[in-house]
Amino acid sequence: MVGNVHLYDIDNIDTDRIIPGKYTKTLDMSTFANHCLEDLDPDFKNKVQQGDILVGGWNFGCGSSREQAPIALKVSGISIVIARSFSRIFYRNAINIGLPILEIPEHNISNDSRLLIELESGKVVDGNTKYSSTPLPQIMIDILNAGGLVSYLKNHKTYSL
Amino acid sequence: MGQTITEKILSTHAGHDVKAGELTIVDVDSAMASDTTAPLALKAFKEMGGVKPWNPEKTIFVIDHAAPAPNERIANLHKQMREFAKRTHSILYDEGSGICHQIMVEEEHVKPGQLVIGADSHSVTYGALGAFSTGVGSTDLAAIMLTGKTWLKVPESIQIILNGKPNPGITAKDIILEIVGRIGLNGATYKSLEYSGTTLNTLSLGDRMTIANMAVEMGGKSGLFETTGLKLPYDFEPVLPDPDAEYSQSIIIDVSTIRPKIAKPHSPDNICDIDDVIGTKIDMAFIGTCTNGRLEDLQLASSIMKGKQLAPNVRMLITPASRNILNQAMADGTMNVLSEAGATFIPPGCGPCVGTHLGIPGNDDVILSTANRNFPGRMGNPNSNVFLASPAVVAASALTGVITDPKENK
Ligand code: SF4
Figure 1: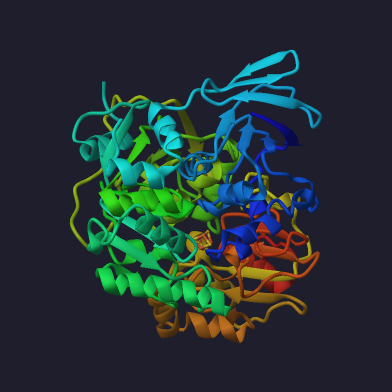
Figure 2 (figure 1 turned 180 degrees about the vertical axis):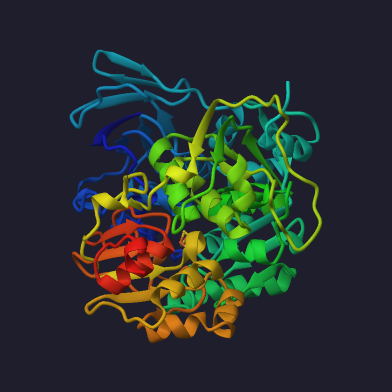
């Protein structure tokens, strides 16, 4: 998987900045694309293209439990989120809705990087530099492979470790 | 090796002993969703093949975040929640009942030693009762509605020992702002916070809720109190860690040294002593939210504002955390005092906390709020500046129009 990078190497990008609370009360998820990250970068919605990669700093997605945050990134076209670390609810939510995320604490990824990503192994190649992400627990790999928690439970009926 | 409170509660709900670091599947005692998260949870539940929740009496919905509905779109989401609850005999608290976390505790949907999951990040509030509780997103909640279970990693715990007696005018909010300032927004990520120490004997249930509530502002998975000194209207088994439990870190805080604390814009861990910001002009004062909208908070404000008037050019909004609190504040005269001072009452619920409706600030407005978060745009306008403080500081400042130490305002 190869994609353009949108780098926001800022710590503590919270769910209010990913999708403000005032827009979350709807089941029409496509509307989130108009407002995703608008308080951080009003131009994001014009720049982002299907398949792009979002790169954040430490504690990405902190704040509320709104699943609308990873959904907003997904409907905007983001195919994968890389961050130095994630808040735990965002981490779960992203996997549950089938949005792959990779935790890479130390990296020099820039806006000009063309990243080659092997999701299965969690490896990211940026030119001559190779990064390994923190491995996901098996249950999260199973949920992601199923396409998200809805299809995982539709098939499995309950959790297994 | 002994167990932390977290390990004890997760062990009883896993059906076998678990240690920090292990992944486990646990039985859930109650599940809660609000009008922000329930509609998406109901959609996911249906897509999973769910018809009726695993235990309707333990499935609780609260219409609080945008209630009463500000527009037809949200009104229709509320309607879906009502219809689902009615059809499945799940429990629903409708608009005006109050904030979900206040209701969960008041209506005894959570008790000491239980494991409760809410589709709202401040579900950590129930740690006040010595319960393990945490927030999840809508799809995780739908999965609990389907199976009665969830999976989680048993977190390591940070022990926080609160010793001493707070000085007059210092509240539980000042204590938790001090703790958030020390630990930082990211300092407890994936961890539990466990509170103990001699101060617990002076902390009410409401005080404990204020402190437990902000665990998530440090990234915490939960923030639990041992039940020492806790008084409840029913009998319960004490919840205590083993004396040889293992913590990843221990922090001792002498609460008698704490000054009134303020979180400056735009992060809850941007903490200073009030002395650094005294005199900052404010446009709006807000008392409410699941952190500080309880009767004792309103009473504290009324004791400061009695017989006085808001400063010119300051507006003040108050949202009681539940109808029960509103009724008590009416009965004991608290509401009269605050309304006569010029405050505007908003129906019990989240109100202006999350910027959906009611009391959205204007550009460059400075808001002094008792809430738990002040991220940019949190109250609905990214060009406003939100400071967080205790109800005493907010009330004293509303009278002067500038950030004021409540001690100076007697
Ligand atoms: S009062 Fe604010 S923080 Fe508490 S549940 Fe409501 S929106 Fe969330």
